[in-house]
Length: 180
Image (tube, rainbow, N blue to C red; front, side):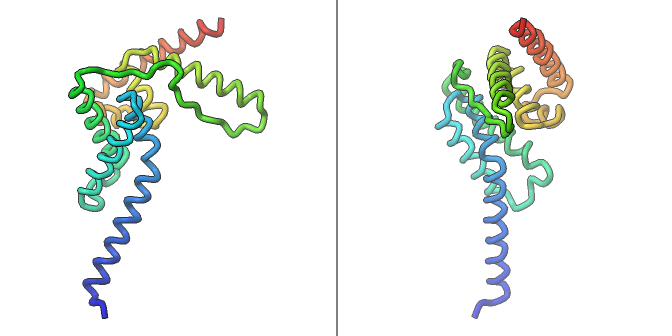
């Protein structure tokens, strides 16, 4: 017969496993895309994301608190930058490696137009300086606030704002020039 302590320990393990599974399900895709953008290699990105989750699991349950996304992206970013520093080079995505997101729009013409606009915007983002690319992706692809981006990138909130402002201005101008 199991003691009350054994039952409590088993319940805690089950809670931790469910917590881990939920976190992996929610953040694995966005973290992998982010790490892939930083590293330029999906295989290395998956390794970085796995390492990020392993570091999370080493923490006591709930230590990260309400800042789960920030914590995960920060750890992921630091691990990816460590790899890049070891290789002593920065990588960028080549044109044509951009992933596309399919829209669930019932009108095929609109879906195609949206996909073309999205692809064009991603190509324009790829032309931005690396620092602007990173903050734009964190803001618009992952939905982080300026303050959260500041904590992830170790840049000041003001610097994040300037980078995003300059990037958006350039993207608007470049996109308008493409349409002309």
